[in-house]
Length: 270
Image (cartoon, rainbow, N blue to C red):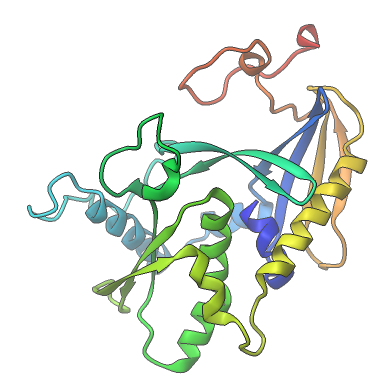
């Protein structure tokens, strides 16, 4: 959903989704694009180190002993296991669409909210890192691209604050800033060549309405591929039939598990 929100102002960033209609509800799963796989496979040592700095920042922000020594981090620069994450399930509405989505959340401030809490997301925080801003050109880039993604990711879920650690070119943290999610659009409002939150929401609303018309077959095994890539002129949709089923049989059977994945839906579940 974050990539959909950002598309009007990040028009040359490809994405690929799979969609399935089951009992009137459309399920969407993001896919890693071929371009993204190539980028990951060909990362330079510098790029790997920069990704690692972000992981180090998260580790330091979430240590159980904030006044103790800095947490030890694997010096082999191995990437973190992205399957290890804390996820929340939220329900929201955009235009005429009711949306239920899962989202990874970095941490909370204070104690975990209890089930009776009316605003359980108010203590959740998103952690980010960025290059320290030394000149106006860097500030323009930060506001135009990074703040757009900070806002889209946190606004959709309802995370109220983003904590951003600013670093130098050697990965040394210079300062930390807390950014209120709802105040991010004000920082770019009225500035030339910047993004507009209303355009992001309108585009995503229209996309979802259009998706309801093209994902027509109501079958948990039938998937559609939705692709945005070069030459950046149109969103392409194709029906893959029963080739790329992503709903699990466990979900179809109404079972709950903390394990990821599992056998995919089969005809017996229809």
